[in-house]
Length: 312
Image (cartoon, rainbow, N blue to C red; front, top):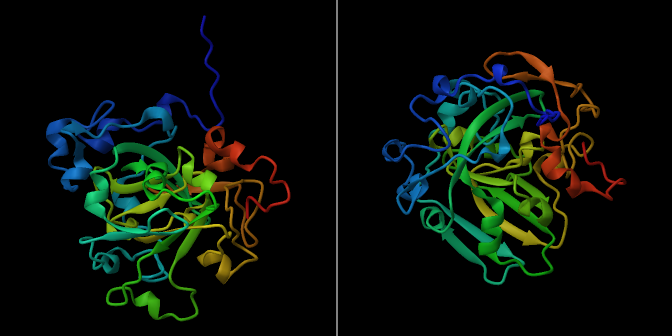
C-alpha cells in the first residue's frame, strides 16, 4: 500500500479553488492550442513550434489562486509611487519595443530584443506562491522560462559569481525617479547558483496574458522562495559580476533588508512579525512557511552559510 506523506507546504485538495473557476477554459496540464492564439501574448510567447504552453506541475502551490483583479491591482512599484494603487500610472510604461542588455563577465556582451529572445527559449506556465516582506501573499499563474536558459545564452565566464538585475529607468513615465533620496535604478542580485536553480524564473505572462506593467511587464525575474522585493521588474539590464551586489533596499535600509532575503517565519522584520501572512483576495491570515514552502528545491543552496544573515 502506498502511503503519501504530505510535505510541509502542501494543503489538502479540498482547500484548492476549482481551476475552472479561475482559469475558465484553460484546463488540464496545458493550454488548448486554440485558446493560446487568443491570449494576447506575442506569437513566440504563446507557443513554440505550434505547441501550446504547458503547465509545469512540478511546483504545485498547495493553495488557491489569487483572483486576477487582486493580483493586478495591489502592487508595489516605487518608480510609479509609494502606494499600492499604481496600476494606472504603470500602464503608461511602453512594453514594446523592449531590449535586455547582457553584460559584465560574459563571453560576448549583447543586447537582446525581447521578442527575439522568446523565440530562443521554451516557455511554460507555473503556478507560484509569492510572499511580500510586508506580510501579504499571492498565488498566481506565470508564463515564462527558467533563468538558467538566459544564463546559458549569456555564456558567463568562470569568474562570474553573481547576477545583477536592473529595472528600466524611463523618466518620461516614471515619476518616482524624481525622488532623489532613492538609489535609482532599482537593482537586485543573486548568486550564480540561485540564478541556475530550477525555481528561478523569468516571467513574460500572467493569467494567460502578457505581464501587466504594474506587475513588472514586459519581463521580470521571480524568486518564489524569497521576499518579493528580490524579484526585479521591467528588466532592462542583466550583469554578471564577481562582486556581491548591494541592491536597492539594502542600500536604502541595510538594517532591515539584506542580500539573501529568504523567507523565514521565525525571523521577524525589525518592525513586524513574519510568522503569518495575509492572502490577497480572501484576507485570510495563514502561517508563513520557511523558504515560502519551497525548501525542498532551494535549502541546499544555503548549506555552509551559517555566518550569513540568510533571512533578513
